Length: 161
Image (cartoon, rainbow, N blue to C red; front, side):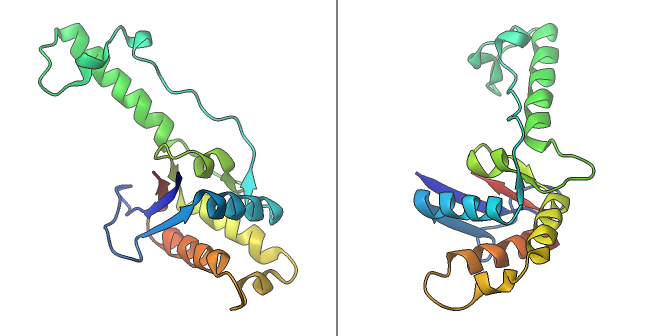
């Protein structure tokens, strides 16, 4: 188990498979990066949103198949369920303080917005001697992570899968 981060375009879709479009971290590296972000105030602790359940919409897993033979009510329920599910993945504050930590901790495809990344980087760069963390000595995980965040901010954000 590890962390796979992907830069997304303005359409919020994963941008590509190039070496600059994704960053893979081991479980230990990912945990260390998230802890370091918390140290710099780059994350905020908020409640993880609840995923909608199929039961809430009167659906079963088989109803989600593209080949399922659905009634009109089931089609409406399926559309509503998918919209609610996407709503959880795409949720974001209009004026974020930083990146909600759950979006990085869980590999559920949450969209980390450019605004959230910008807020996190602003907090990081406001920290005294922040740039010492990126010096080219030893493990370069943090420096790679910060470069990746800056690239994601300039694109459409990132997703963790």
